[in-house]
Image (cartoon, rainbow, N blue to C red; front, side, top):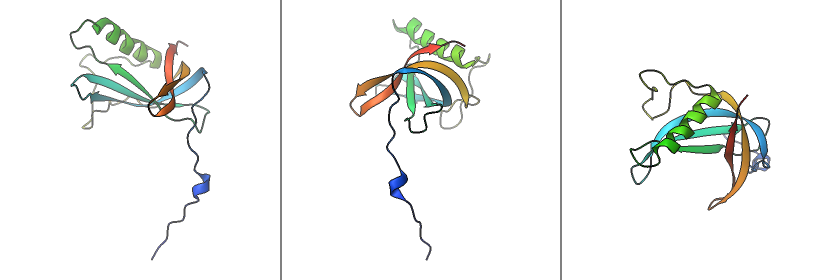
Length: 131
């Protein structure tokens, strides 16, 4: 019989970073659908040089023909411009799980703040920074 030994004392709960400017790494973007049927992009980001920071989830609703289409489209456009992502003529390629292909490990700077949520304190992107 083989044993798996883990030192549970070494595992630490992630801690949100203080409000400020941080470099973020894009871990991936996936197309998701809400319970109400609305489609959105879910970007997963990690904070550089903050090993114990939790992942950030940046949600961007897709335009749906409604009154908020300009705001939604602009949010996605700013996100793509910040990370240097150019939309292919034929559209973005998605894998079987809905993940965008080719948009991983890109870096950008952002103003990050803390926000109280039903799950406790978390970090959110307040504004994307150019350069």
